Image (cartoon, rainbow, N blue to C red; front, side, top):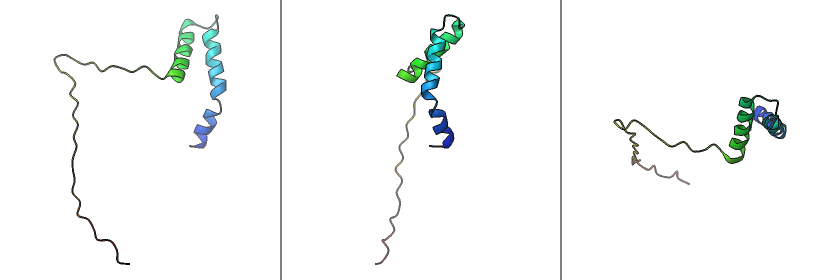
Length: 79
């Protein structure tokens, strides 16, 4: 882990408290309270899954390709 990551993570508890404070503040703008609540939920429970949707006339096609590649083995070095 980089020093920057480690430093940022050291503020986790403070950041969560700040988000909770904004969410609970009656004086904070509604948008800020919603953003704080969403951030707390995302961090605590993960972001909700996003279903795939597309154009009915141009559906999504998932293509999986498995390729077997042969490699000529090399003999082991002599001992």
